[in-house]
Length: 285
Image 1: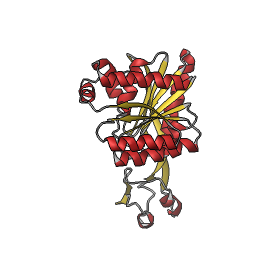
Image 2: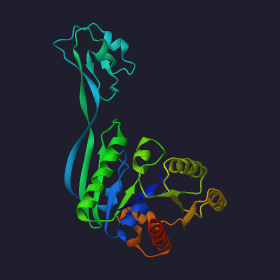
Image 3: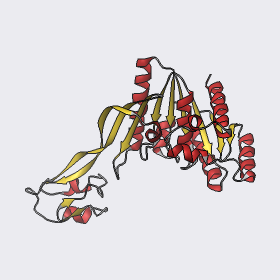
Image 4: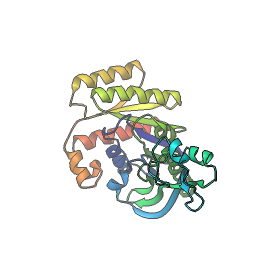
């Protein structure tokens, strides 16, 4: 089984649009949306939900009003302002447990928190493993690991040889969780100063975990000087540029139509993405 993750280092580079097109082009695969903080691959693929499960992670404080003597000590030690009128604001509570430790009458308990949900779904392109965190919840790295584990289990059960993951932006814990142990990372960037900066950061993360990487320069013609700078950087770092995709409003039109761009309209963008997919397949062998 091979596992490909598509990362960007920053949001808005077109990563999810490319993954959706890969979903239409690839065969014998499982899809995984590892961007659990802002999952949106399902918006394009329009899956039929087959399973929905709760994801419990972390803890929040809870005050037993009958045992509480209203001494005020918990409110004094809470650095997050989560305790008011001797009740806990579960959104503000960070689950540190300090109030639980200092309560003289043991009126405070730490309870598991419903952090989100994970799903198994069926799309017209195959199965999709995805998840969604609730507002103000953390531990997204654990949820990403669960999404990947579910995708692997289903791929083994169905005898499928490829997992394509839409990774989260940035370089933090969710990215590390989606990157560790994969066979190849496709890094989608754009020729802007922030795009160049964040590309160098995500390349460093890939190197740290020993994951080979390819680069796709999306919207390559919006700043040709920056595109050349990215190409020069990739040559210095011995990273192959797998594709340069031009800017085209057809991508936005495909998003509005909720279709992968390779299915929405034939043209230069669709042609480049097809070439990119063939390049990625060659690198996975």
